[in-house]
Image (tube, rainbow, N blue to C red; front, side, top):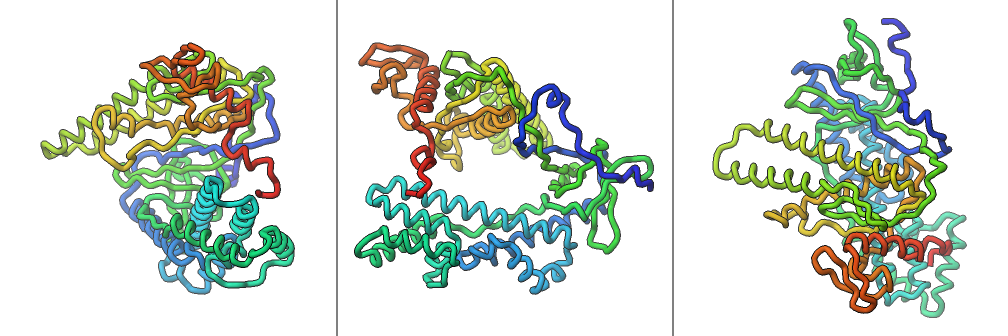
Amino acid sequence: MSAENTKTKTAPQYSSDARLPQSGEKICKAVHQYSKGKISSKNMDTLMEIGHGCMVTRNYIYQKYGGIKSLVKVYSGYEVDSEVRVAGFREKIGLPSVYFSSSVSRALADIKIMWAQVRNGINDAVSRNERFSPEDRHYIRFALKTDVCYENILNRKSAPLPEKIQPGYEKVIADLGCGGGQRVKNLNRYICRQTRKRLHRQHTDNGLRFTIKKQGYRYGELDGEHGIFLATKVNRQRMFIPLTDTNVYDRMLDISLNPQEKSIEIIIPIFVNTRQHEDYAGEIGLSLGLWDMITTNTGNVYGSSFGKIQQEISQFILEENYRKETENASDTRKYRVRKEKMDAALKNYVNMEINRMLAQEKPKTVYMAKLPRNPHMMMKGTGDTHLLRMWKKGFVTERLQWKCKKNGIKIVEVIGKGISRECSACGQTGYVDGEKFKCSVCRFEENKKVNGARNALNRGKTGKQINKKWSSDTSGR
């Protein structure tokens, strides 16, 4: 095999990027590669065996290092890696190091995300608790931010703090004033209670997706076909998987297996430059909806068929569920293929309408309300309840945020409480009558979604933004 065929190349950039000025910032984008044809049963069994080993490795790390006694170890990483190697766990399950080390890193990243969610939840609870003084909040936030201090509190031990942290800790204690010792104990117990409430042991049963380091694969050709050579459990032996494209990458890859189709999907994270548009200078407020996807403060609607498409998907799922309860359905694959096609059509429509909105509105800053979770997400529903439960506002929000970031647009989430009942003209509380918002104080009437978008714009300009209260306070109080 020639060196030309296996030489690493830079991933191609989109042609539209070259026509726009680039900024120094980069954002991560997922690129997908797919296997060509059907993979042999032998190779698929080998990949599934590797996937199972990676799943076992992640669960081992979750169980051993997901608790309060390993908080500091998780953030160092090296200590966990050395402990696992000394324990001989990799040799026990027979997993190559290129899969094992990446699985350990993925599990540690999941644990870090869990701890970040725990700390954010406690910070939110502290902000809402009116019984705490600014000094109490300062102490709790300092403890949560400092890994060693947080671990000492959770394990009820008095290990010495690092020298660079000790002066700051003493100052925080001094700010509590007289009776600080008892207040510290009470606050520590509060931190422990809130942590127990939110902390959980992670576990995965997904053995069909795993990660491989760049040392465990290479791109090349075999019998005139371009593909990827993946490491196996046999030393110095790799399997060849033909691919549908000739792109070459040199970073850690995510591999997703599809045993039913005997195919694989490779997910590659790449960094692309953000775009800068000189003519994007306005500020707009947005209101996301179940039927009309996006409504602006000027009354423009984007995604008017969003609700109709969701309704078709919801009706299809309800009909299939009813049919499966009344007869023995044998076309599960047919249902899955059609469902995936309908979901793909919805996602394409969302992306198209967001692109159209940004191109037409040309905003520099976008304000939108932070929406609550869908109600009763884990419960069954029928009719409108089922449609509401399936509302893909999370996907819309995620795509909107990503596209704004890619185009150098600032997106700001504002406080959403009472935004639909507030009059955008006078600020008083009104009411909704059908599709109209009406204010009994100033007699203002407007479409309810337009009124909500105007309120989002007003709240964003007046500083009623998510976490705005603490963003400019460097002391943490």
